[in-house]
Length: 60
Image: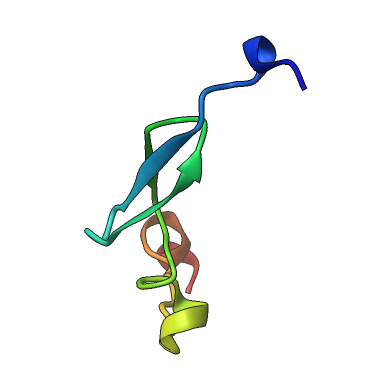
């Protein structure tokens, strides 16, 4: 492989909206995500349902 065309590889810090951080490898030094394994309902075993509010309530 040619070294001049390969992207620079970093130890990237991944930050979730819940505040959890972890380190992984990436071509970007920092990554921000909305959901991670600490807060995703599949991994936590909790389920959050979105309640229908607003215009839909008029028809009920």
